[in-house]
Image (cartoon, rainbow, N blue to C red; front, side, top):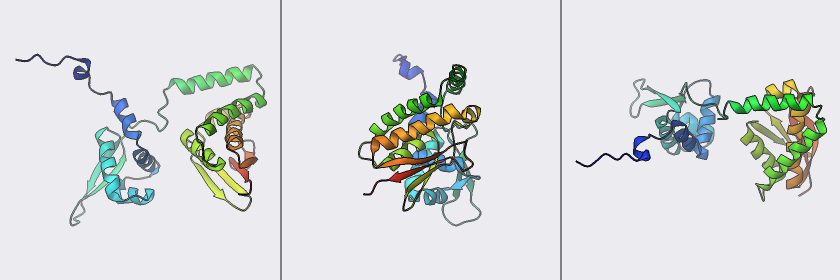
Length: 231
């Protein structure tokens, strides 16, 4: 009898977290995940496809892959309909948070913010640090307009940006703030970092400038108004 394969690959099953990250590494699956995360009830394949402007046949294999790795729960709703039964999908109870951030990151952020505040770090330094990060983010997106580069970066950070264009430029609203708890504790530093990030992206990409930046200190919703140069 042949000896069993005792190599590490044979003995250790794939790490569930790795499989989840691989599954969500696909842009379409990640969009589906966000669509289900925001839904107030389980969604059918056709509803998901309509929300993402995709064909149901495109969505089905992605849903199955996400179900296989434990991201989704599915219930079957036959209701006596002729043909294929309706499957409705929702996030599994133990599905990971959207940020996938290790628990140490929020703790570290709180400690660093307290340290910066205790040291009397001026808001101008926070803006400058944010600008450096924004410049780096803009350089990763060559050939992209300043407003699109900004929206892309804010979306990747979890701000769920929403843009409205008019004759004067573009207003980008931050419909969600992933740093809200930190910002409420120290708006000068945290909102300063955010402002610097925005200015760094817009200035580096060119074609526009930050006309107004509204944060927690303003009565208006958090948003940025970008004045675009004539094209």
